[in-house]
Length: 525
Image (cartoon, rainbow, N blue to C red; front, side, top):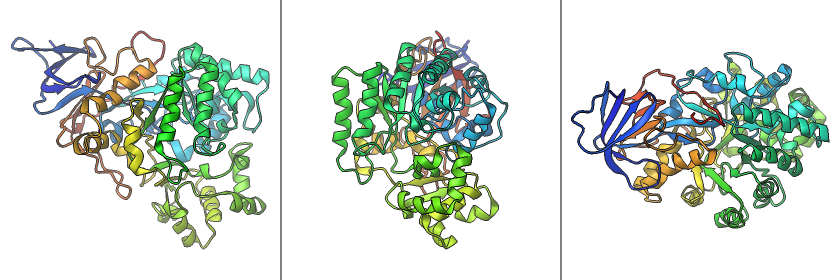
């Protein structure tokens, strides 16, 4: 007796091979593939998938849900896209280990414009304690990366300086312990202090530790480095060359105004592969990027932690310097739209551009941003149209690409990628434009990221694999989310099963929370 039987659909198993017709049985969290007539097969629940695609659950390789999922464990913006597993702890900004509770609280404030600052279910300090909070308490599974920011804070505090030998050894030990407790690798966000204070030598040394234990290096590169075009990615490749770690470049795309084209960026990765390095990347299909507003401020303003940063933002002399150095991170201040305002008097700025907010306040843009950040405890997020749209298919469709939504769950106007990344690829890139075969798109969502991480029993519909399954209508799937109306759920995803339990049933969320933290080093996740 199966717990669930899905019959009549086109099974696209995640391998990239053409689909086939059959049935998928689910029993005790595991998949069984059935072919031929099924007269004697019994199940507690049968789903008729005629005209539908049945495939593995989608793995999102970049998500900012490490805290916000505690506030909304149903996680509907993502599970309604077919996402059953998310990679968190990205951009160097993760939340364990934190041996010092005061440092944890300071980091929450500093990064609240990216990961939020919700009420937390408990306090923790270690990776093991943090991961335990996800087990059967979220709608999706979690894969955790250790950010280099907490490692740096624990070993040498918030200052912008190289570590001593003893401090570097401490960071390596903390990383080793985190990987042994179930983390899957190291992440960096080299535009985000204090992790951005780490130089190439330090990162190569940490990556040697990650490589030794089978982890990956997941990097938001140092975009301000050198020519600000190829040099940031050359550093990531050099770290892989020195350490032997598998390198994964996250949110890889051509920026508006770049001095060269997409082929030069992609050629850099391809040449790295040809030289024997293990390099992959992820992309998302929108022109709208999004992050914490603090990213536009220089590293010197952050040195010393959030208290020092707020003092800089409030200081007239420092403001004079900031006016000369701070520039829009996007086409212009008119195309950086602000969100995540908590104070009632600031709600009028929700969805407004930085330039418009400055005009409303009667201030220069940099002064307005400083005032708003101080008023909002640093927690402002922004969205901008900084991605070169015409070149996106070259990245999404590249053989080395998988998909990371870079989803942010803050404010009334998040980037539409939070709600629509995977369905947009299936509708626009597969069905409408024919850039990708359906089977290849599904591979990028499923078995490819599972292989990259080393997940032993997910990413494919195969006998004995874990039952993370999506059933969708290929003719109806679409992503209605837009910049001005971003909070619209995807359409056409009819059933989503996580660890053998229905989370989306005939298009409705069941309230089930069967997700868990997937821990590295286990024979079964």
